[in-house]
Image (tube, rainbow, N blue to C red):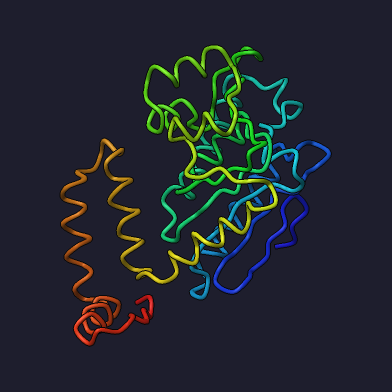
Length: 259
């Protein structure tokens, strides 16, 4: 697929997806969603890709929200369809079998914060700003912002942010547990690569299982304990398990095949 709104780069075992609409502060529109889904499918189908990095172009904005001009005249039916599509694509990120890290550079507002929250981990530059300002436009968040924000920081604080439409700085986001790390802008990608360096030493099969288990905790249709038992059992038939246990007994570092 030829990309016009994102940049896709594969560096070693990491696929980097950059939302690239700087004149619109990387705002999300239908075309960008479609390209993002395509890039995610590429990463999932490429065995050599072990992790996914999502960021925005420039230092001013990760993603400053949805492209308001695109849906200003929507009917209620079109609005619901837009919401369901965004939720579906962000669910793909949340359920990715490969770890996804958001490198938040600048504004992560509305759909941008919803995108970041769908990733497994978030690293922010110290100039990052976070918020769900949709109420100031007379609309609610539509891409699961009300759900994931509450999961990550709790009911009281999420209600405050959602109802006031206010922004918080990176240091407060860190205190609330919304992000994992805050670093200087010039150190953002280095920190992400440092985390990926730790992840890539582990079993890809086991990491996929961990993602499935944790997500099951928040899925009312699943039993998290049963999911954990199932994932645990599945590991015993994998090459990764054989390599990991053999390496442990031989007192050497494991070299996981990812199978």
